[in-house]
Structures are given as structure tokens and as C-alpha cells.
View 1: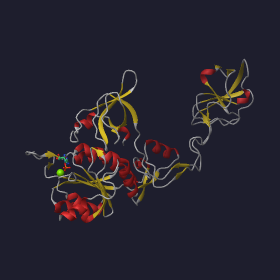
View 2: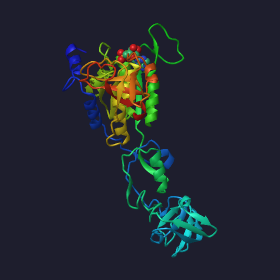
View 3: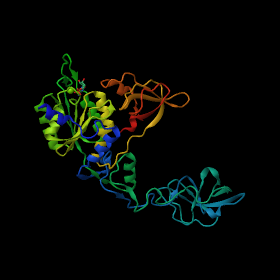
View 4: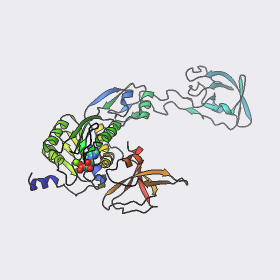
Length: 420
Ligand code: AMP
Ligand code: MG
């Protein structure tokens, strides 16, 4: 490629480096949910995204019922002072309701979940009464209509129980089951193809020569993509060779909804990834004002969204969680995946940062003896130090305008378990 042509490939449109927030917004704006949907058995819907609204066909609970074990009676019968005796005319179990009518001066012994019998609207807690054979004595001070769950108070018949675009988690599985649904309409799983680039990379089982490293990125990517719930296509290691990279893109784009590569996008590397993107697709942006992860590239190859991640193992994980994952969640059918929540904590470490970039520092978040949230850096922040991802339980996120900070400063943290 001539110098002029190369410059036009590398030249970013608009501002030179996007902020993390702008990069995220661009990715979300340019990716659309996959087209296909399918009906799956309820359990198989775990981690999938609902493709249609679910309207409740029934009231949950179906009947007004007891919230506690006790005695059901008419609230208007409760004594204003002293105590009052009631005749126990039967027992109501959750699976065996009392079908008679509760009259004046009467009550029914009732178990949690049992429908409230006709004539009653109140349950007096078992512990609050004095029971003897077929009578109970109830003191004043009890409230009418207490300890009762109303029919439909969870989900009412005809109410929207689940919106299209909602990710189905354990709570949604249980809720759909409570509505009696054995199947759910979900988006099909997007297919995500990924490969590593680098002549120095070896696969597990091969001996390591001088300067060679085992390919770890395909394993972290396997883990992150599997937890996200997409279908994966691991294409292995591709040599730093223009034709080989080009061919891998052609193959990936034929079947995948998204393509992820690692390596080959840092300054000074032979830019085979960008060259292939230029020939086969369209680049939306490259370079994000973040560290690690600056050379992240985003675009399209054919119908597939393309994420070119840096090669350094920590940069792969940081860019995945901050930018790839939101994009893939959109691809999976979520309309606007929420940004992970941030918490404030007092830093125990001095933190070095560079103005103009959002810094993601691996940290360990805990509470000190006084109960305050405190965070310390895991130490060396080289983007190749993967062991520190394993030691950390959060990212300390320092905004671009924040300079070096001293111990004691209040910083923002993103706990890892809020990232997926
Ligand atoms: P690159 O972005 O290709 O210049 O790679 C940056 C650094 O990350 C180099 O030290 C590479 O050896 C390393 N690296 C690249 N790809 C991988 C990989 N798949 N697994 C482990 N290390 C990698
Ligand atoms: Mg490389």
C-alpha cells in the first residue's frame, strides 16, 4: 500500500480519540438486534432475551390468601378493647381450602397460602392468640385486613409481565413459571467468531520457543462470551500475514453476526487487521481515550459487527467489558443495556494516571474496620499482567480530567460482579 493510501486507512474521522462514553454510544447506535427469533422451553430461556412482550393470562396470586399462619375472620369483628372469643369452625390449608362461610363470632384456622374463606378478610397471627380446643381468644390491638395477600398483587391478569428486550434471569424464569408459561419467544443467539493474531502465539501443547507465548486471549474471550450467552466460533490463531488475516475475515463474515480479533492493531505493528477491514468492510472508529485499550477498533465486515481488540491480555478484558459486551447485548436483543453501576470508595493507594484518558485500574474493594468502602490497586498495572485481573475484584475508574491521586482520595469503582 502506498503511504497516501495507508494514511487514508489510518486517518480517523472526527475527533482523534473517542471518549469511552462516546465509543459506547456509537457502538450501541450502530448495532441492531439479530433478526431471527425462536420459541424455546422455559429453562432454555435462561440468559436469552425476550423477543416479544409477555402479557399475564392470569392473576398471581390467583386468589386472595393468607400471608401467615393464624386465624381468618372478619376484621369488623375484632375487639376494640379487652379480648374476644371466637369459635374455630374449620381449617384452611394452601392445597385444601375451607369452602364454608365464616359468620359472626367465628374464625377458621388458616395456613400460609390458603385462600381466605368467604366472610373473612383478616388473618390474626397464630402467636397473638390464645387457643383452646375449639375456641380462640383474640386481644384488642389487631388490625383489620392485615396478613392478607390480594389476588393479582404480584402480576394482574392482562398486565405486561415481561417486555421484549428483557434479559431472562432466574427471577424472570420463576415469574414466567408462576404465569404458567412452559415456553418463551426469544431472539436467536448471535454467532460470534473470534481469532487471535500474532506470529509469537503458540497453542497449548506446543513447546515455547524464545519470544513465544501461549495464546491466552482466546480463553478469556471464550469465558466472557460463554458467560454472556452467545454462540461462539473459535477460529484459532492467525499468522501476521496479510493474506491469512484477509482470508480469516472472509470466513468469519460468512457466518458470524459479530467478529472479534485480538492483536495486530497497536501502533508499530503491521496493520493487517486494518488493511483487511479497509478491503472488506468499513471502519467506524479506532482509538478510544482509555487505558488500557486505546487501539480498539470498531466497524463492520459484511453484515457482521467488528471489534478489533488490542493484543495485551488485560486490554482484551477491559475493552470487552466496557465496549464489546454492551454491543453484543444489543445484538442479543436488549434495547439499551444499562451501564454498570459505579460506587464511591476511598483509595488506599497512590494512583498514577494520564490526563485525557479514562484509566481502568485493577483494584481490590473491601470494607475497613469502620465499615467504609476502601479500594487498593493490585500494584503493577502493565496491560500484560493478567494475574492482577485474577487478584482484582473491581476496576477503579479514573476519568480523563483526573490527574494522579494520593491515598485518601475518593474514587469510582466498578465491581466485577456487576459487569456480567
Ligand atoms: P499486539 O497488540 O499484537 O501488538 O500485542 C501486544 C502484546 O500482547 C504482545 O506482547 C503480544 O505478544 C501479546 N498478545 C497478543 N495476542 C495475544 C494472545 N492471544 N495471548 C496472549 N498474549 C497476546
Ligand atoms: Mg501482534
